[in-house]
Length: 116
Image (tube, rainbow, N blue to C red; front, top):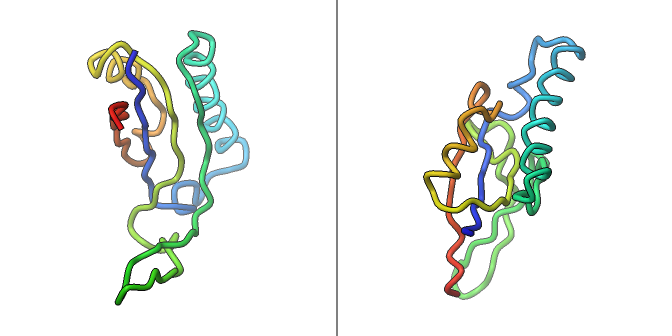
């Protein structure tokens, strides 16, 4: 089995702007159902929604600087992640066909390099 990291990118809080609490809850339930299906199959290893704001670390003149950001005001933020297993990329892509996030942003699929 290959481990994959799936990153959800979206426009932050703007995604749910204008939606009723009931609509938001229905969308959340779709995400939960997708994750539960992978958990039941023994494929899910971890998943979490991320806070909108964070910190960026950069080397600057031999020192590490800690900067505010990324900001939720940017065009697109990393909103959450899933770590799961599939036989190969083709199977991983098949598992993602009905992922609800594609309606609200983009998904980035990356295989984990287990050689390091």
